[in-house]
Image (cartoon, rainbow, N blue to C red; front, side):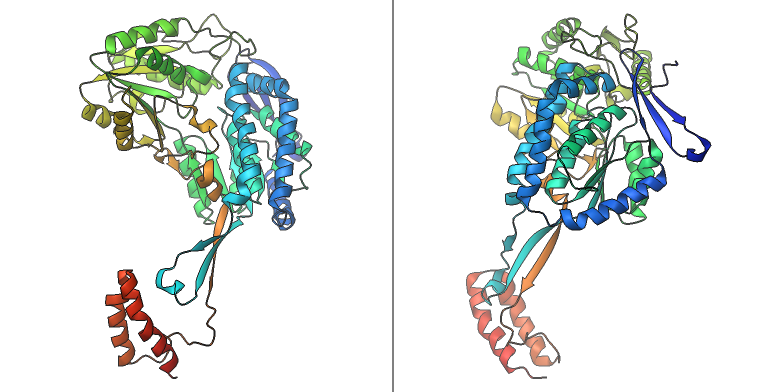
Length: 533
């Protein structure tokens, strides 16, 4: 079997020519590990219609009822941890420990948090409407579920990214259709199995296995929102398709995340973080440390420590518990990494560790690679690599460090390393990224209470946290005037007296000061009673 056949799409009978079987290989061994049957576009449309019917009932359930379902799914995960971790590891290529720590653990934490807190976070809010409060008016903001949400998820974190979004969407009262990546179809099937065990009503959650045609059909079926995590190119196409039906989208499209190491940083900790941040999940993390800027006075010591630690990493098949770095998930992505590294070599980059495929292993393995003598003009530094590379550059002062960190089309995450927390915080505020950490990197996607997302080519919208929950609902504003017996003074007919009153109100009422409001009230009340049709 060809190495390129990681996502074989095999047509079935002529009668079902639009239905395909997606065959999955373990990218570390290139062995066939299973297959799922893809859906036709007509079946996708039927699934969306079924979800719309299910929404009428599901949206009326209480938060308590929804929370019970989510926690039941969580219990199923906890009862099958090894089995689920093994599926993720084989389908994606990552080590078992990363499947557990970076995919499963964050989901279990998120499910608990939103099962217990969604009702409080979505509680109706009374708005302060200024002077109108004194006239006994009130405005109340309610949050209604959007309806049917389509989630199109990636292969790098095939469990944690979609499952977190699914749980939040369900807790908000939506129905969900999930299109898993065809590179990790077995994880998509495992998510469906878990949610079936939660005894959700029919149509509330639907798994949509298949190739890109299934994702296209989902968007064209006029769902109420699309959440997509993936490449910039595909994200733009999805946005274009969604615009035809004015379907709102949340796009998380990756990053080129900088790590800024100040001269007072703890080099032992910072170097360990750089190695893990660059090579965890074989570098296939949108928040990977993809470019390091280290102060020139400490660069030599920092690079030495990074090289020493990188050489100690154990690369191999992820099902072994003593493996640090697994395989890449797709051969096409491995080739992208190869192309960027080769371009860097031709321009004078120095490879200190790695620099090519691991020929001692059968699958799609690229060696953890440390590179110097590069700058922001290199593709390796400008374009998202999504592989196990660590380019290291230097800076002279903090102004240059901030400028270099911000010199990117992406803006997902960044990190600053220093013993001076005040200075680290100050610099973090100046870096253009959705999340900037001080003396930490990568991991905040695991914090369900914090928002995840970026700007620029990293996309827009947020997942996780209160902001992520707001993506799952639409605001519904109710304004109440209890003084039904008073006619509003701005109603017809218009006349010069009304014009003069508005001139006075423009000066006094719009100041938002207490005395201005107090002076305005008599006029407002008098004209409301006096004015006749």
